[in-house]
Image (tube, rainbow, N blue to C red; front, side):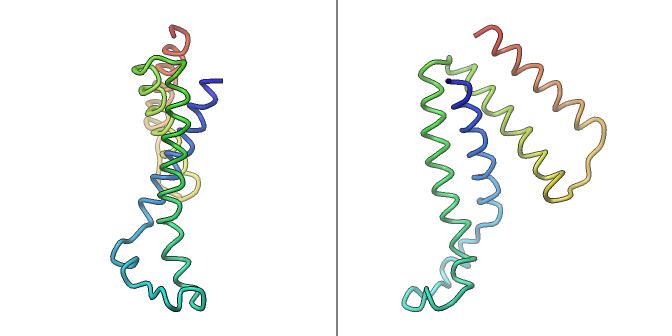
Length: 121
């Protein structure tokens, strides 16, 4: 179950990363709270910030649950590796970033390392 928690924590970290990418603190300062519900653009400004908080808290919760059963070094390495691969795949497939053979080769090496850590833990 701990490895499932680690995978969920990685998904939350990927979502947190993209919320951070789309969040704009200067735009947050422009929200007029008195008329918040009457203007649609306020929601578009606030949603990345709300996701940043929610995904960050979810990440912390599930990562801490995983670390109760997996050693800290193994959990951290696997969590970071899964997050790196997930973020790169999201950039390639969702945001149409260019990719090449070597990127997939290196991501597969990261996966080999994660599987090796799982086998020895």
